[in-house]
Amino acid sequence: MLALSLFTSIGILSALLSQVAAQTFTSCNPLNQTNCPTDVALGTNHTFDFVQSSAGSTWNTTAGNIVYGNNGAEFTIAKRGDAPTIQTKFFIFFGEVEVWMKAATGKGVVSSIVLESDDLDEVDWEFTGTNTTHGETNYYGKGNTTAEATRSKWYPVNPQGGFHNYTTRWTNKSITWFIDGASVRELLYNDAEGGKSFPQTPMNVRLGVWAAGDKANNNWTVAWAGGETDYNNGPYTMYVKSARITDYSKGKEYKYGDQTGTWQSIRVVPYVSLSPTFFAVSLFLQSRPLYHYHLLTIPPEAIRPYNTLSPPHRPKPPPNAGQVCL
Image 1: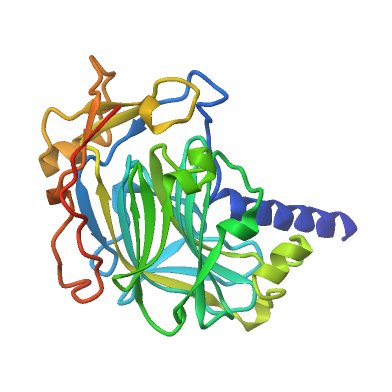
Image 2: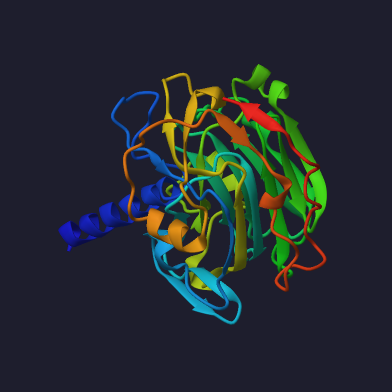
């Protein structure tokens, strides 16, 4: 019995450790290794309607199980160790991510939208289950978590009260967070330690929920999440109706040119065609680059027009952008 109890405890601890890893990990850090694979690019814009269909072949379920229903994708914590998470198989190199989400309730339960790069650049939205008046925005550069108190900012919203539009607009000059179409925060490149801590390398998108209030976590994490999670009061479910993702670069692949981790060092391999069919095939058929494209264009037409999923609460498209020399 003791051996079984110990085995069970180890299993639960392993699951809890994987909760955070599911959302903030890298399988190969190009700042430390030279043989990391290239990142498959989105290279266009696309709306993923989780009410109509599942995440499909362009997302990986990295932890737990996702159920799809009338409210879209359902991410549920039903027991200790649950942390359902999905992650795109593609990356964007500057762009816009718009998610229609209803956060989970529950003490210590955290619903999140994460943009994460191979070298641990990160941009976050986080919503704790008992905070019904505010949501948190955050960012990290190269996995540096120091001065977190000054990086994280909270803004008024009732995350559990209904669906809201959470949009992140990311360029080489700034990051802007929007709630229901209204800008709530802007981070300029130079304000992130002169750019040193500014997220600037290709990122994928991760959606998930986890129990930061689990008793195995440190006291600071549990307190930040609103207290210890009571699994007996669950289940706790986060809902995502849709995600609209725009890649400002028109690449096929993104490759780190060196180990500086700057946006200027990223090599952009172009598409031969940007048709939807070619995009779908390119996610699976990745050829090696024959040459590199050294001019990143951020065209206004990359921003998808309003659709029926989000008519009144979408931020206005950015003004006409020029070209960024890489």
